[in-house]
Length: 115
Image (cartoon, one colour):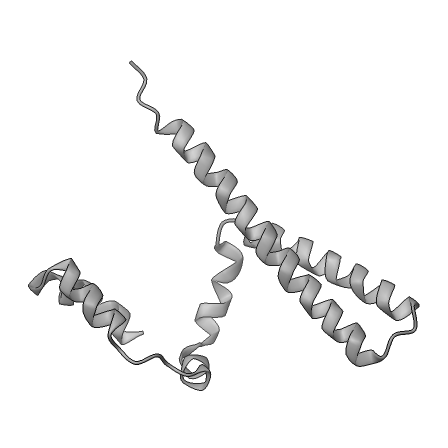
């Protein structure tokens, strides 16, 4: 978190292109390093993000439906779990992107210059 707070100060002394080059040339982080940086404060802000509530609710509903359908068809538990998680993630991501797209279209309609 300290790096994010110092980011504007780093931009003041250099150009934006130099800052972008420095960020993109850094070696990629592995998943363990990323997970170590996540804290409860980051997770608690998710419900305040635009479109997150609907995306998560649609994902949970469709994941539950996938669970019930695959379980009813007597599939192995691992298959049921894979379908449930896959449908939840796919539906949540699709719903999130659709909502964000709709918000951007509405925002552009408001930004049209009226003469």
